[in-house]
Length: 332
Ligand code: ADP
Ligand code: MG
Image (cartoon, rainbow, N blue to C red; front, side, top):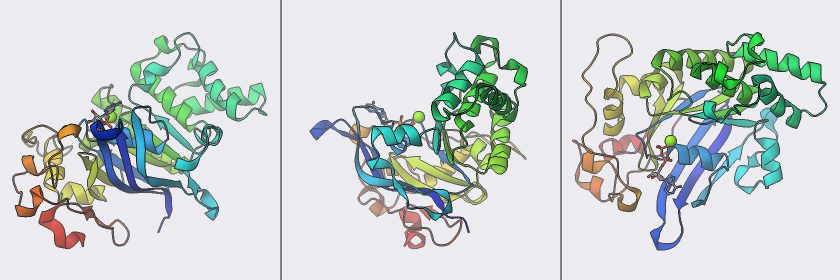
């Protein structure tokens, strides 16, 4: 039994204020357990990045957190920290150190005029000011090796590295201060499939060695099936299903999860048709009533267009949660 390291409760985010505000995150409940890789999937626009930005307090205007709580649970049973109440100074100390983030296209945020070493060193210098120059250099070399890049590339400039290498440098940077939680928002989307899987394999191995927890966000569920422990599926700003990766792959309960899983070719075994899902994701300004998916769902029942099905609470380790009227008994 592993305890939580990050708990998100009834988190709500709006873009804008007043009557025109768009409700982007709707009562999101999610728990990241210590040491696990939690995959978060959903079509573009489902609110995945909004969740990542809100949780890390990096949400920029017009985004506003309009409700809910986010707590970080330090190792060793120290009292939980309220992320939404942290001051900017507290957040600066907290980020990188306890929780770090790798965003989509992060590899392009490396500074083109500085070497890989100088950029890794900036993070180490800022957070470990007492560390001697030589020790910091050794640590930078160690970090590069950790992500599968030869230490002799420390002197390279970003343009001298491939996209995959630059993305791995960003991952090295995120791991530099040995944070407990790493949030990755589509960190490999710009890379080819082989490179994506190579980076993920490395990440999962590092997670075992360094024992951090990961929230891995992608629209590609097939990657999650292979590399995560649990998967949460988002639609229209809500979590609609959450279960163990193998369970959800074998037996998705929510018709949206099923559609999403069938939209990608199977990793092993026979290649299935790309079934896809008819229709398009909803616009925030015109979210269908009830279950937002009901207008695209081939199995919709009477209550689906009227009342929002609850996700419910998971019972026991690895338990499944599903917000769907087809499985309402299971959710109660
Ligand atoms: P995902 O990461 O799953 O693709 P996002 O979190 O980026 O989804 O977006 C969720 C919803 O919030 C989308 O409908 C998007 O249009 C809206 N949204 C995102 N950023 C902004 C913004 N700065 N202003 C207004 N709406 C936004
Ligand atoms: Mg996104």
